Length: 196
Image (cartoon, rainbow, N blue to C red):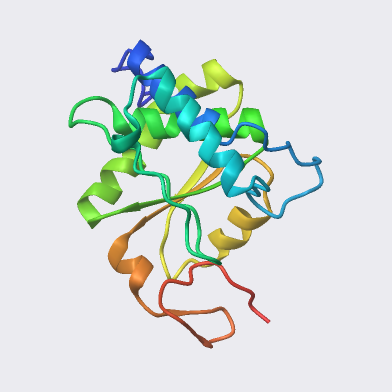
């Protein structure tokens, strides 16, 4: 039996607004050439991203004091936080966001870090259940896998495939010291690295 046959999925307007808002944060990012498999690159400056964030906030009537914009420290990554209430369809929204970011900017690598093994399993099941829905909507499927340190071959496919690729990992596994294919210790928090 098809796992999504029991569910009738639909995109709600507030979910579409949330997804569109995230995509607009990165407006101006060029779509890479088809042969560029280096991952998700965003060449925008802080000034460009900040202007995009302000435009999204204005569109949704978010006051500037609630927006809380501050540039990341030199060399630090940008952290964009999206908050949604329980029961609003967060999982659906972030999966839809992945498809829209891929469509808009060619981004193809996504890592979903969850707080527990139980939630990790639920997220993986959601990807299975929603696969046909997103295939019907976007005419493509996301390739997803649950991280397992004993099955590192999935990381190679994750890093080299140009389609939408999602790794689902619980925070404990993310923070643990991993062993690379060559048997070398990899520092905590490093999930994808070179294996030479």
